Image: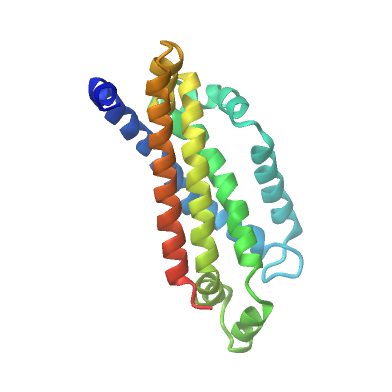
Length: 220
């Protein structure tokens, strides 16, 4: 095992780096855009603080549409858009476009669910104290939902890692591309198995860190 890994050490580290770039950009998109989208889905629902069925319906339709796409088909569908934005549809940078879009849709739905789990009494107490919508969200709802938000992000990151391996099929680079080129196309099954082990360890590490942080933040 060590001999095989040493032989491809440079390529493996490069592939892992490309995966980290793709997943990192996806996480950034999920937090910066997915969190606000999920928040508006929560706020605009019927009976919530700024009930607005039009905004809710539009956001809900967009999120559901993106999430209903099989990811590989979404990547192919977005090739013209990716080429328009970056000038190319191949490579690690290009792979971040479809990954970011699915990341936003994926995490926004988990954010909405986490916020819906906050007891209504928390919001009612904040309203009775005269808090604004912004204060209610940042000082009460987010604080109460922080453990669920972290668990949702952890689940999303694991999904992003899985999605990033698919990008290898369309020349996106990363560890999935490495496994396909060297493990599958060159029939080096042992090397492909080692890559799978690396991915399993990475996912377990993400899960452990996410669960630990969520447990620390959960004051209930």
